[in-house]
Amino acid sequence: MTTLIINIKQLIQIREANVLKVSGQEMKTLPLIENAYLLIKNDTIVDFGKMEDCFSTKAETIIDATGKIVMPTWCDSHTHVVYAGNRVQEFADRINGLSYEDIANRGGGILNSAKTLQNTTENDLYQQSLQRVKQLIKLGTGALEIKSGYGLTLEAELKMLRVIKRLKKEQNIKIKATFLGAHAVPTEFKNNKSGYLDHIINDMLPQIKAEDLADYIDVFCEKGYFDLDDTKRIMEAGMQYGLKSKIHVNQFNSFGGVKLAVAHNAVSVDHLEELTTNDIEALQNSNTMPVALPSCSYFLSIPYTPARQLLNAGLPVALATDFNPGSTPSGNMNFVVSTACIKMKLTPEEAINAATLNGAYAMEISNKYGSITKGKKANLIITTPIENYNYLPYAFGENCIEHVIINGEVV
Ligand code: NIG
Ligand code: FE
Image (cartoon, rainbow, N blue to C red; front, side, top):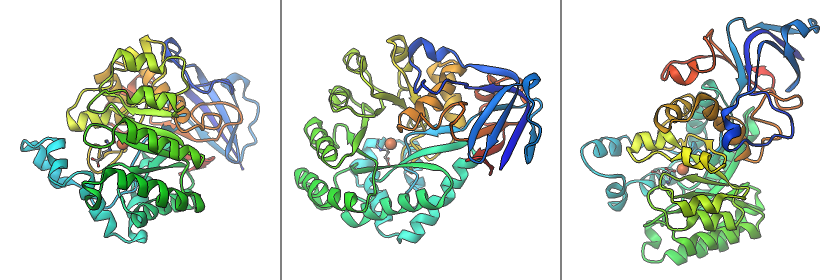
């Protein structure tokens, strides 16, 4: 199967195969070709260049992209898209004056979602999650990470992870699975947090390993949830089972979690709405990707991750949705990119780099995803006719996506 896309107004995010992430000043540049073509063979990008050098006209499918932009699909490295029901009542409660923490303290929040999920069958959970994944693909996402963490019992965590495994197997999209047993302390262990950690380490992890259900391990490292000692225990236990970590940290408080995660070679540290100079220093000379989640900040009205400070320190930044029922009921990466420009003052180039190549890096798949590179997967967005790529974040709320191509197939 060959597909040739011709007359592309701008073919953006062109990278050499050895560029696996971009940092600091490099993020200001978004390499592109104007008036370009791109050739796909089966699921792979095999060639591209300027239209005047396009000699292969024998493709089985030809797509004319006159006036349109072609770019890699979004790489969403932080989601909780497998969940049951919703938390629309808490949304209304927050508007009426309760805080996210107030709601959690009275048994709402993560524990509320866990209760709903525990009472949902595996098949129903799969169907609910599948609808969301299909919606994400339409919005241009071509690779995503999905966390557990709304189960909080052995049985329910396994149910979530098995649903993720089934999505991996049955859906034509790249998925990475993260075990987030340490998302909240369940009611049964209310006064025995360390007992819950033992349960995660001694009962959940071995079973997850036996069924090969996770690629990474995560902890909600936050005041009122899991402290530094807890986080260290979980990361170290994960390492015993070959799971690197991706950590929820610094959402509401900065108390050393970033340094700890970096010291344990975390693949990413995510949220970072609260960031100190110590955190930035800890990230320097590390391989850990800082991940910002601006639609969570938007929805909860909390500060935005100071991405500019990270970039000024020469660090990379990735952008992801955090799609979940409590703090971010949206998996729209187009909105994330717009919000990063509008609220975090990233340039369109920086935001697009953060949401493609650096997002792929935060899932350790940037050798195959996240840029227009010969040999990478043909996961592409073809936009509607637009002026240039700046129009994407500018026209927030407008759907500028005409086609999504996943593994070489138009969805
Ligand atoms: O990433 N911060 C922790 N976990 C999720 C939200 C959890 C929830 O409210 O359901 C997050 O924002
Ligand atoms: Fe999250």
